[in-house]
Amino acid sequence: MDFAFTKEQERFRRELREFLERELASQLANIPVDQWIRGISRQFSRKVAEKGWIGLTWPREYGGKGLSYLDRLIYTEEMLRYGAPVALHWMAERQIGPSLIAYGTEEQRREFLPRIMNGEVMFCIGMSEPEAGTDLASLRTRAIEDGDDFVIEGQKVWTSGAHVADYCWLVVRTDPDVPKHKGISEIIVDLKLPGITIRPLEDLTGAHDLTEVFFDSVRVPKRYLVGTKNRGWYQIIAQLDYERSGIERLMSNYPLLHDLLAFVKEAKPSGGPSGDDPRVRQRLIQLRVEFEVGRLLCYRVAWLLSQEVIPNYEAAMAKAFCTEYEQRLANTATQVIGLYGQLVPGSKWVPLAGRAVANYLYSPCYTIQGGTSETLRNIVAQRGLKLPVG
Image 1 (cartoon, rainbow, N blue to C red):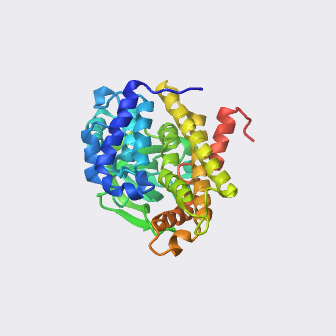
Image 2: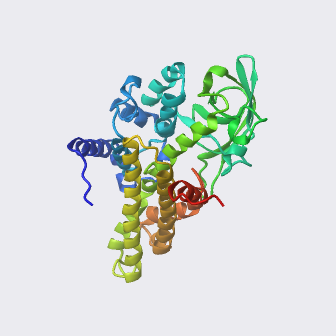
Image 3: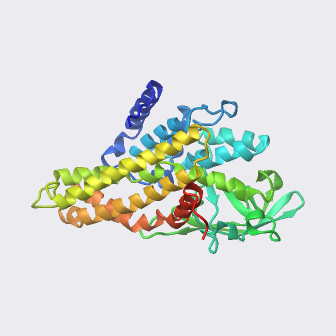
């Protein structure tokens, strides 16, 4: 099949590239990876906001552009291709804004939507707990009503960016006496409130964008309850489709693929692996083909969203394929490069070798965060293929 973008979309892509090449000129020789999680720059987010690119798909009555999800995918693809530091507004734009538009009160929309679109606030998402990961409905963090407040007690873990975020979109239990899926609510929590303790969780690469967050009698006004009390689980399901469907699961490590291909093309047989080696060539061709497959899966999800179809199993399929691709890319890069870049004094490939090792060490997280591959395959089987629940 032949795919074509509209003239407006092609023009938008060119505008994005010109902006990114101008703003990120100093880093283009060594583009960072995982910038939608780790790249926090309030200055850059404000510049993106000034261009009107935060909230592209939001309705115009809430300050958005009213564009399609295909337009937003173009924006996402180019931001991550250039390693733009977009983490400050990323989750707020991707999940929080659409959730507030769908379930929030007008007061909540007025308070948060303009600040998100202006690149002023950063949200983290408090879902997983020590004993409630894949089985999220088993969560125990509770919110007890007390007058005009909820009093929150509990712990969240693997919370990305909580140490620098302004607010937490917190999933809590508000009714312990009903079936577990029916007693869950969502609350916006200001992370400056007393009783909140945030501790870093250092991964194998030495980074600590993941955190654990403790809530000790934290009082949150009831006006920050989002949607209907005890109906939070059904809101979460829709939000997870947005989280799992993005091309960030594929493009996050695009700089590694790009530099790996350049390395093999330029390296000499006497000093490192060469593109003339059929074993290396076969593995790189496989990666390149799989990258295009993942890209098309993500575009399919964006097209469905543009048609106002909820891409439940399609999003799960895209996320499972793309995160497993990230692991294969990290494995291949580490094996192909080996210690070559580190052993040759002054080699320009030293940063690439370090990046490959770092991605290899981090790669087990890819198929866990945002939903394990096993869970996603179950979604595809049950909701896509209509297989019986065993």
